[in-house]
Length: 460
Image (cartoon, rainbow, N blue to C red; front, top):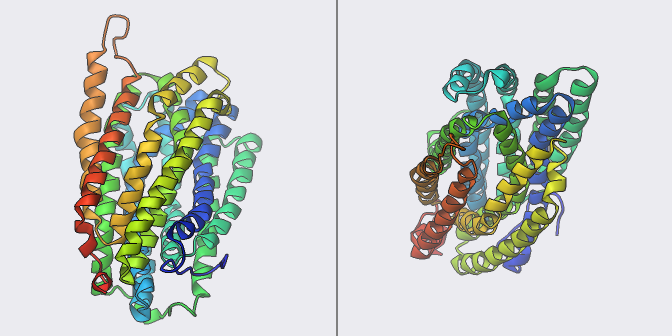
């Protein structure tokens, strides 16, 4: 197996191919998660718990602004994997060039509107005055440097579609090392505080983007990078938007629902906000197997659908999902066993550690369930059906999560707990995850995703 370059996932044992592809992507996602986690640890240890809360409170707004890149990245991965599997070189080349152009346009849009919307959104969320200006400064710096993150994530989607999950890992590991060093230097030595970790993050992201661009420019054996194809082409831009828009809309709705829930989170005060940040940082790592296997399933399904290998898709989906669930069960057990120690890395406040660990216990079983949602959704997306996962996400994150969160919290309000029981925030999350898995399983077995390919390969 080649470590660098494209990988044909239409041949060989499906599970072996999926796992081989997933491992470097999982390591890359771990490194990606370290960006935010190291930011939180550094500010929590060197600035204080309020700074930790500020970085975490910026998350939902940052995710909302990132939806353009999310849509382009998903669409790119699907288009590239199907054209690569179908051996259609010109279509592959034109789709990659289109991705490069649309990423630049999306970056410019976010650099303009992001800083303008930052403060109004923070006010809308009732962000405490003690952390609101830290949040604002952090977000503005990240938005102004969004091009680095955008190009890395989207070009990584292109590389994944080509079956190359190792190159992106190497570039990301380099960037993560730079980010960790700069975090420490900017905060501990220069005293830049929250803006320092934002500055370190965007510098590191530009490094990873540079390497991803350089890699693609050297892959002349796989596709052609022609200047005239960088001009927006209606056919490929339309297909990219059609495939990626549902995922972008999903992320936008999810981010807006998180903003609505964040407002409820903020009502419990700075300590619960900080505890929520700690849980979500660890949650980010525990979720990585699900996201990594889901992305691997997208590439696997895309290439095999393009090659007309539907039987192989179904076999790989069943076995790959069971493998992902087993891995997630082991990781979840380790998190529960060593959870308090992990949370102690963010803060030395014992009450905060205990509160965070209790919240993690509530949602722990949900991580295994989430493997079903991510793997089967990944297959549907790889086949070209990005709309069904979008509706499932809307139902679970909006129609279920928000009413459950507000309803359960409201039902637990007493004289001793005038704001309600904060644990209900996590109970609502667990229930919505379980519902999402059941819906995804139903629509996967319904089978309409099987006729959505853009290459016509499903008829082979």
